[in-house]
Amino acid sequence: MDGRGAGPVDLLLRHGRVITMDPARRILVDGAIAVTDGRITDMGPDREVAPRHTARETRDLRSAVVHPGLVDGHNHTNSRAVRGLFPKDSIDWSPVERATLEGMTPEFEYASAVLACMEMVASGTTIYSDTGGSLFLDQTVAAIETVGMRGVPGWFIVDAPGALGGTWSRAALAQRLQVSTQEGLRRLRDQVDRYPFRRGPGEPSPRARSAVLLMGMLANTEQLVIAAQELARERDLPLIMHKSWSADEVEASLAEHGRRPVERLADIGVLGPNVTLAHAIQLDEHEVELLAAAGASMLRGVGAIRVGRFPEALAAGVNVALGSDGGRGQKHDVARAMYLAVGVHREVRGAFPVITFEQALEMATINGARALGLADELGSIEIGKRADLVVHGLDATEAHPKLRDPVDALVFVMRSGSVESVYVDGEPIYLGRRFTRFDPVVAYETVDRLAAEFEAQIGIGRFSAWPLIE
Image (tube, rainbow, N blue to C red; front, side, top):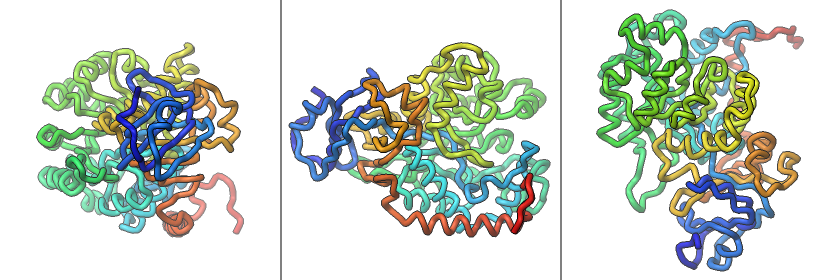
């Protein structure tokens, strides 16, 4: 028996095909989930759970697939309003990114973050983490609260001398964004003080919380990285940062320290079980071993399939999660990342399987929760955990046929196309494919206006390959 006794509950979801992601990885072919005060208080076969409870609200899911909310472990939300306005013939997106940061306003950051959160929720994601990207942190938090999902945002912090030169080029931008190491640490303390990562017993679960988040990738001094880890250990928080994104970063580390980036983190005492490295693409075999030994996590990103060692990291026991990133034009869709993790590795490696359907779903759920230091709250459907749940509708072609084991179909066919409802703390923030906390039309109108203003600023049609006829 799975239950904790009979009694009234707030919500009872019945007759779902529940992919629990619990330690046994059970799939409840005809399952039920009971929710009280935002937590799962009972779950198991419907024939056992349903008779034990009366519910304020009951939904018959009619064999719809249910799974834990997906985790987007690496994301940036403040440029959604201008995605698609990027060069088609170059990977150099700096002109648009520079203009975005130069012109960033509280309204722009809020509107972009709202759109990003909407896209995540509609594709089944219930929590995301940044590596520190907010110029107006309170606006990002407000956007998270507006949509109702969970987020781990933080201040944009760059303290390394010259980090905003070169590609960024404009001195005025560097002057606006670059901070001292002391100010960088003050901002880290500010975000974790004002948006606590955890709340005490009986306190409401925070939708927006902050951890120790750094840009990394040569943007931060070692002094700040060491101080950040000291803060993280002092507060029992995860330390999440970009690392080993490009060959240039590796070459710079070798030139300055004679060590590769992850080796250097180990040398200075930063690497540890609370560390999650976004991207972590340019690793050698020894660095994978260091991550495994430290219990650290890594997140996939651009270039992962071509040169990354993610299958090897999984085999070595590293906790590998997924992230959509999202600066330039990517879609915030972790379900699509699951599909790519399975399919593209097969093509590049010429092997079958390389990453299995089950591993991809683990990467998007329980592994992601571990990477954010939240596996005790999220990432699986278990008694005592937060009721962050995704229900796939039966009115989508992707949802059929209804298979008893839905994992392969979820990762390879259904993905995000059939998401019908999303619950956070048992609250339906997306119900019947409609957002429940706000009017999405207003959000769309705002972001379209801001995008039009930005397009006019950088030059209408600047990146259009075909003529635009007004």
